[in-house]
Length: 396
Image (cartoon, rainbow, N blue to C red; front, side, top):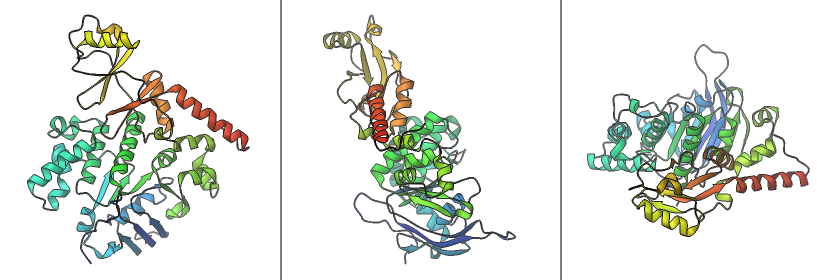
């Protein structure tokens, strides 16, 4: 038995299977346990979301996996190893942990925060520096701009990105996330959710995610565990199965009205034919006069300005190019974008925010195409027709 969690070797999956068998937590001087006889298998490389009301025990259950809360009884294994037999500190260094409001050390720079666990594992400085830069790039923060900043100099969304980078810095097989996006605004929250799905598609970690937001659970979870008092499992299944067939009234209460319409959140941008070649892309270094000429020849009114890494920056109208010597600052900044992992609900919100069309970007923020209102509304119409034909209807 080793004193750290070993990485699995299955291709495309770097996560480890977690099993909990009759795990119970009973605090002193309380009659009822906070968690009672909880049993579950969490598949390797999947996102499993615990959702339930406040006080039901979902966070306590998750925190027993890395022994931030010590179980009173039961068995927990991670990658086949008995987690309760490992040194607690070593165990935690092999499990990523991200919480609400990031939990960054305020007097450490971004780079120093990300480097904490690799430092505890006694990586050499060159390896740590390379990993910090790699992780910042992975979560979309330019190292040259952000590495030396303090947390107070970051937005809430940027802080959460740093928190995720820190949790993943030592390449742990398991990542625990305790309502990590609950303290940011809705648009930033949606972007962070997309970012997590993008990272997961690359990394294949085992992620246990706690939330009280059922819509977030549906968007992120490969499987959802709806929990009741003392972390009793009301239903543990895929999002589509729970939406289609809630196990009981408790689960139905979480699903709420409009379950059929909620299934639209299961559909991703990658599942529809978004437009890949219908936008004129121009480099931010190009001469405005030359761009205007190209646009006129192509009969285009708008063009999309990209930076050197093909990341969308601004929408430019042909009228804005007259008399300009450069493209610096010209046009409307691209606001809310989506990724192939974004839901169609996210896409619809971005389209409305952006005025009829949203940009679709890839793993490193590069332009993939655009998606417009007609694409989304046609999918919605098809879903309504399918539900009308099978008699289930769509309520809203």
